Image 1 (cartoon, rainbow, N blue to C red):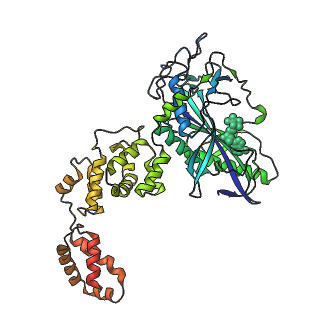
Image 2: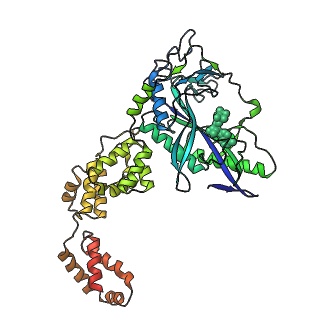
Length: 505
Ligand code: ADP
Ligand code: MG
């Protein structure tokens, strides 16, 4: 269990996350305007009369956005409400033409109810994180303050795009139930899992850098071993895993210091200051906003039929957690490898296509992808949000399969394989086998040929042979090096080792 040491003892963290993901759909939640997230689209070109809040315009619920919410709900193992409602959340700010945001009220069931996901806890054991709810709401527009010294501009392209807000659950009545996030690392793991599920389901790009995923971070602290929850603060609108972790830790330490000095934590809304990694009060509970929620008279209750849910359930793909479990159990990968290879569907598809029908390729291919391909994503699309550069030599799953097979059959050693890989990155066409042939990269695996080189090396280095025989076995490296040098790096190191040891003993 993650704890922070204060002056007077250990403290535990209690963390609640409200995660917003922007729903992928052609049009917005209540209007026909395009919901395409694309920063190159000129400002205010994807705004309908509904989004601009022209008088008399009526919102029409986008059925596809509801299906997306149901899909995500099923991915969160959650109950789907058969009836839910939309309400107006009033606030006045230039990013909101309507003067209210259409959302689903906290007091009533939202479209997605209680659920859970499983994450790897800090103790390396799987842990369930309970979800309280997920509701649909409208996104706001974007204000630009840096275009003119005295004016601000508003871009309403994003206004009205569907957001799904996913809120984690704290079991206030059963405080010993630890199914919540308790450390900065777990917060990151949880968010990555939400992201991976959303991507696997095509519900959202869930990309923090692009703003299609953001989180409000609630933090409180309590003395280690106690069950009572402390007063929390909420840090708004976090858009990077790194900042979220820094903010949680800073906020926890700040609260611990207050409590240890006999003070009380006040339930404030905080902002995160990127420049120095601190948090500061944005507004206190006393001036909490009164949103005056009231039912939206323009929208009927949302009724979802069992059949709709069942039809969506039938089309659910394997989720990242199940894929990971399969990679660990059936392919013998580590949890870490499995997690990296299931970050996007593109990666796991690429990986599985490289394995083909040879599971023995799994581990070496996993290693190549994680340590080499991830460093060169432009050569193969492993993430939909990245652009493949077709002017480059594309590395395909079958290229990598051929390469690891060449190592497995001792046609090339690891060093040569790396050379072939680098040649591919540099634009060399042809399959790995053809490249190997062209550049004469062939491992010497013929025992007889290797043995004669070894004989020469032994003859030339009599003093070292003496030392080795008298117990300086560390010299084996010297002999292997000499043989490799004499063969221009082409000898099979395993065979060299074996014959050398035989001869020297
Ligand atoms: P709101 O912020 O709109 O009032 P909630 O009361 O539902 O919404 O809480 C938001 C998030 O804060 C939830 O994820 C919840 O689990 C979490 N939370 C509530 N109480 C605490 C607490 N004492 N410590 C940490 N997180 C908390
Ligand atoms: Mg909140």
